[in-house]
Image (cartoon, rainbow over all chains, first blue to last red):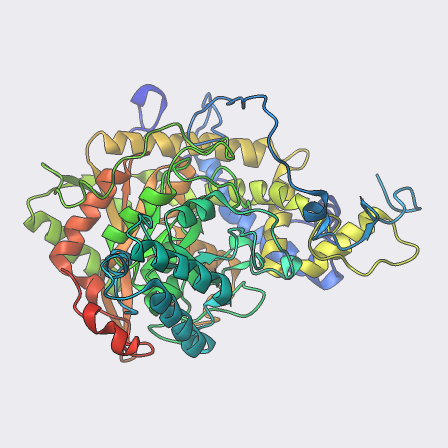
Length: 120
Length: 505
């Protein structure tokens, strides 16, 4: 079954896709920081080997020729649907704050954002 | 009563052969008695459920219209929010989360008179294929308590198999309704992307997630879909496509039915019992006059690779909201620590290993330098997968194959993440392409002196649930695998079950 552009020649898998290099400890630490996950060195090591194995499997996608294929972010093509500009009942502040671990008055409480080592 | 279908229960209540209060009470009693062994239900809502059941009974007594599913007990997967009780996604992070609103499916079910009796365990944030990633302990398969029910909606599947409720809802991102339905011997339907509103479904992979029914019959699946489907102003990705009357045409066999059987679905790596059941199923359809067409779907083998780019990428974005500030678990703050460190410790404490693994994977693939190589390429392959399905559906009405390559496996039997991922080889592409699929009972495997259910998957083109359900119903009618009752817990229900003891064909 052809799945190429305009249903022409089938896309033949390329002979071999190179196995990606396993992730380094530094790379995994960097990703953990981007993901806001405080991991132990043992977890970093475990993820390093597990993620490398999954990435090895994913490398199979390299076998396919995707030249000129438009990426598909959503399976069902749709355009933005605009809502009517109408006032409707909103949730109460009490409902919205009910699940917050720490509240001061009507505000969510957080540590100092500009503390050393924190923030952006 | 515990083995009656939803529509039988509804009709019995409507004709006053039983009451909604009695029905809901019996379901709650069965859960109380047998849930400790199966661990499928996380919490129940007895007070609210019995109150609403009493209201249904009053409406019926006064001759009023009580709704399409009036008095029918239903369980929800733990990632569908209700404005009462808790919604934890079976995660420590949301262990105490109380939603301020109801999911749209909840509103629709209650408008139809269904009685929500509780929530079921799942793999944490719906990530897994065995329900072993549930932070509060695994669910067990009612057919064999030392085996998994599948996942991620394992609690809903096990609960329906065990007769806790005739119907339940789950969510399916890469097979999370169909695979546990197969492993528990029930019907599981993943509707087309956009068919059912996701408002109030805790997001995992937004371009893949879909809510759908667990039932014991195809007829109940059609009925439940009819209640929950349709456009929703609260979900801008719900489709503006009319909802068919799925029940009205269900019994009409599809004329000149062409069943496509992808050669890749008959892989030599399928368990022998599964391979046998599927070849018998093909012959069953052939005997009914269907034309069997061999189809080539070479991209089947690229599904898992594509899925494990798109799903973790979307998960890492969706789960970024869990910062421990507005809701969810917050680590105990330390005096010298900044906000970022608090986020990182809260997330590390609250998320289990599989959720962390997927967040890491998705973050890596979306990070600078890797985006094109992984994410963009996966989205390009996604389009190729859709085209391959579209070409197939120009030649056949539905595609047939196994739901899962194997029946239920032992708890702890797949500890390596990649081997767990490969369980979903036949189901992920349905979500990747956004089409619809259903798993229905198709036989049993004899394993260690027990019968383990085998599921058959049918897939149809987007928004063609009507054909999908009709083709499934043809098989159900001809085979009756669905009438084989899971031996767990005995035929409970006491004397009230008498009027409903006989199952319909």
